[in-house]
Length: 294
View 1 (cartoon, rainbow, N blue to C red):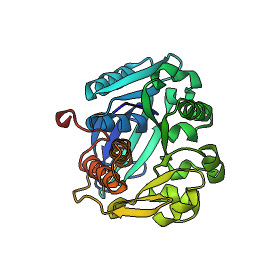
View 2 (tube, rainbow, N blue to C red):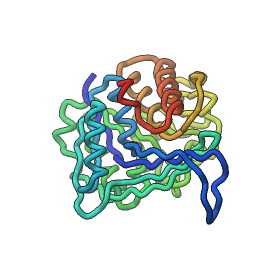
View 3 (cartoon, one colour):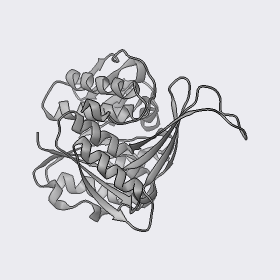
View 4 (cartoon, one colour):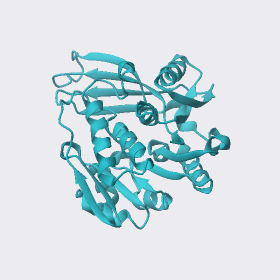
């Protein structure tokens, strides 16, 4: 497989797992872990886990967190094309995981907010097959221009492209979001993001997006996932397993779908690969595959 270029955030995640409600103004016991995260970094790590040749384009601070992210991602098999920003810190996300394994996130994108088009070296596109963009780049006004410029550059270079919208809560202008991404080959939303973009919580509603995108692969949580394109809809069930921490499940799903799709496999195979990695991600604390499994 040729290179997959991922554009997105690299961050440090502070994951706090709490079994009871958080006491406002008081103390709530928790198990806390520090891990490398960021949606772009997560997808890149899972792509490397799948055996892909992957490079991550990101902007980090000149700090310990940025150096740690580079070291851990390099160990995972990801090539890091990082821009070092001396004027901002590396992104940090506080992740609160409740007793039902559902996460609430408090993100500070830090240096990632300052991404510019020149952070993508055009040489990275030479010989590459695909560019995947994390939607967080588009959901901050300060980095949106960079994300759109990188998608355009990839298209001009003949790469296929994909986008994960990432956050239903941050998509404030759905029509503009879709229009700006017109021509992207594959959109990878979850059901909440799909509802924001189409008004429907039914995967079949993704057909409304096919005027802008080549195909839509929708994660449907415990129900599995669906693929919608101009030939119709295909669905697969979720992979059984315990859910410990839902952080990064969608990023892992993206990696499974992309590696299988780019290898020319069937839509069902793509979805099955995605839900398999998604199940692995939710079965552990942290959003990236453990080193021991790579």
